[in-house]
Amino acid sequence: MPDTGVDLPTHRQAKPLALLAMAALAGLASWTIGEQTRELARIPLEISSKSYQFKELNAATIKANSINGSLVYGVLGAMTCLALTAGVKPRRLGRILAAVAIGVIAGAVPCFVVMPLHWMNRNQDPAVLDMTRPLLYHLGLWLPIGLAAGLASGLGRGVPRPQWLGLMVSGMIGALLGTVVYEFTGAIAMPMDLTVNPIAATAQARLLAHLAVPVCIAASLGVAGSRKPKNG
Image (cartoon, rainbow, N blue to C red):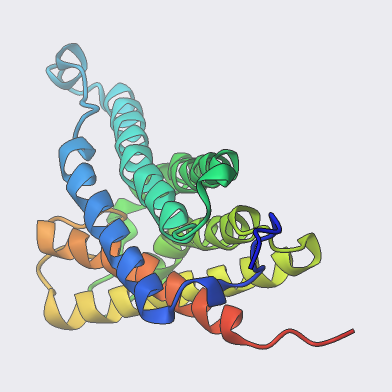
């Protein structure tokens, strides 16, 4: 069959299990990178060494946390979006790069809102048994990644624009499911790992986040893509 230059406009190009495998690899890759960058930004010594300069110290801490979070979750967003363009033909390289850029922005920008909110309310953070506040923090960080993944999927695969909204909603549903999986698994299996924080305290808990989010997003988009389009 000759190449018509048109890609199939759904996730049926990639088998569901392959899509999940790519998402898991993306999560593993982003976790590996994140472990090297999560403390890259530090509080300057001239600030941390001052006594009773709490306002200045808080501002420096918020800045460092926001930068580190953006590095960690910006990569998670990029890798998730990249995984969802698996199988796209090389001639669509520009679209793939655009998808990755969308993922970086969606993962990084929310950190400059969520990280300050978390720090300013850290003394009000709930116990592990009350997951409302951590759930909201993580949804604020990961729902945009789900939205971006849906958009990147449609962009990378040449899906008609009217279908993009459905893909974005599916991506956000996947991010919601991934967040719930992370919160409940962390609370039950890792109660001492501070999974209530935007970035957990241990490597295993951070790995759980980096796997749950992209895999659930890929699963949701895979289900959406497996539905037969309605004939007009």
